[in-house]
Length: 202
Image 1 (tube, one colour):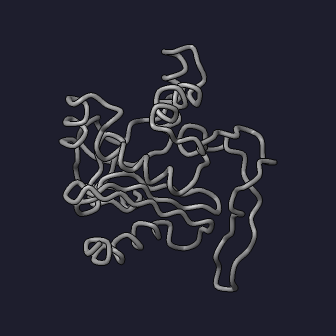
Image 2 (cartoon, one colour):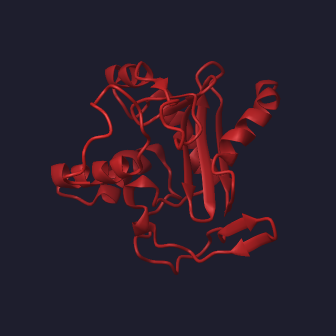
Image 3 (cartoon, one colour):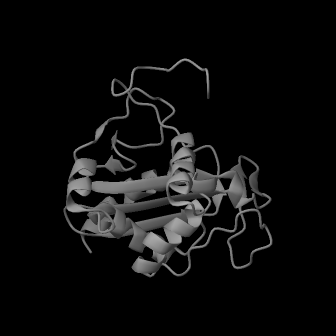
């Protein structure tokens, strides 16, 4: 927020913020002269063949999406579909679980980055312990988190949770998509940890 004091000097601590990703989307638009989602489509989605992924912007009438729910002690409550523009570059994309798994591999291997950029990204990890409200990662770096041997990212929106991770040791990718949100905002990460032994045996 303009005029607000900084929480700490840059590079001295950690605090997770989705706003940073929204700002990156605005930077992309300023640098390219194109909408951020069009740049993502042209430079990432199309080259990787992620044909299911779309950005519906303000359209809430799109079909073939899982209905969102909130899980409470009384059961499940249906939620309205929120405009994707509310999340913007921080999570406004829709797609299939299989395409999310393909993205996990691209993210984990750095196939859409140069070698130097990927090496810098994997060397950037540091502890998330300074931010108690951070999404569940053991470490976080340049737009990517680490849980054990898995690197990638999680997501959490109103009625949706997701995870896209790549195991740097085994070369395995995994995508977890839930159309419900509740008290555990890190449920996909906890599912990954619970399944880790089973995944390792495959």
